[in-house]
Amino acid sequence: MQGEVSGIVERMFTHQGLGIRVMTAADYCLLAAGVFFMTGLLTGVWKYRKMMTSVDTLAPVYVDIAHRASLMYSFAAILMREFVPYSPLGETATSWAVGIPLLFFGSAIITYITHGFLQDTENQLARPHVLGSGHLPGFLVQGYMVALIVGEIGGFAVLFWGFLKAVL
Image (cartoon, rainbow, N blue to C red; front, side):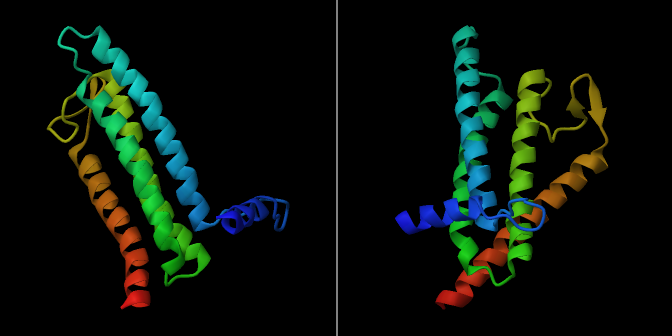
């Protein structure tokens, strides 16, 4: 553990080129885990406040979803970090393999928070696709969902494939 921490600290102060710190794929995972977990904690406070001020003691659907998803995605990011050393790809491609799912995790959380704040729907996939007082075109929502599925599964599949090759 001590060696791992010192390695992370060493990378934090390593500069390349114009003094810009280059983060690794594992760093992206840990950063995302921290952001997602903090978001989960903060949305938990929001959820609690909504529950305490509600007649039925329930938070709006997407406030609850934002809270739970943030916590789950934080642990998913840590899980992905554990698979990074097994990646069959170079560092840049591995960063893409983790970055794409992490971006989709984050965008999902932002979407849930948005719907929770607006309280505009109880099902973002129901037609018409409501966003505030407007509607989103179906092809946009479907396209996003296809990209999310391909990006999340594809990114992790690369890491998991590397692990399977290493241990089997």
